[in-house]
Amino acid sequence: MSFGGIGISPGNVAVHHGSYNAKAVERKVKIAELVLRVLILGLGVLAAALIGFDSEVKVIFSITKKAKFTDMKALVFLVIVDGIVAAYSLVQVVRCIMGMIRGSVLFSKPLAWIIFSGDQAMAYLTLAAVAAAAESSVIGKFGQPELQWMKTCDFYGKFCNQIGEGIASSVVVSLCTLVLSCISAYSLFRLYGGNKGKSNTRW
Image (cartoon, rainbow, N blue to C red; front, top):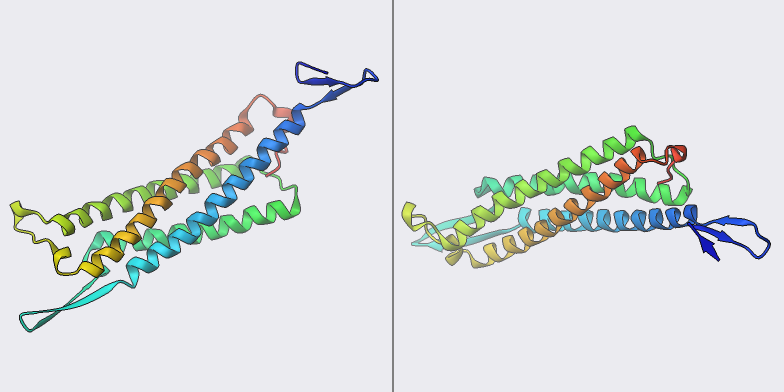
């Protein structure tokens, strides 16, 4: 039997289930965080590689033209941000794995604030970089007739396709960082909850 979160054994000994449920929730949150960070790491590296190593050479009226990602500053910014996010995620993946191996790692408020701030910064960076790259890509795909900007993707089809794949990967990275920032916010502000007696939250 259970009443008010307290189970009653046949011997009339009260058995508390609240701590077990809290640990189960924490474990699920830890697993979700680790999966998201690994996903961000992999897709961040993939996006940076797809865009950074992309190029295409065309000969137009006996003039050789080479398209590369450095021709668009928005793509350069995106590659840099993807690299930063991937490196940051690698550090956080190591932290998560070490925490799971040890089984009990003190998740203090200062550390929680550092992780929360870092995750927020990564989320804003990726969102800004993806937005800028997407805008530049739309102009490259459809041109800007008012300014007499040509549709460059008509000439560099392979280059644009690979750039599109890189931006798509970056979009997924951006969405994952947004979800992760919510998880880190939860992990931080739960330390300021009513259960102050449980200040040694395990993470």
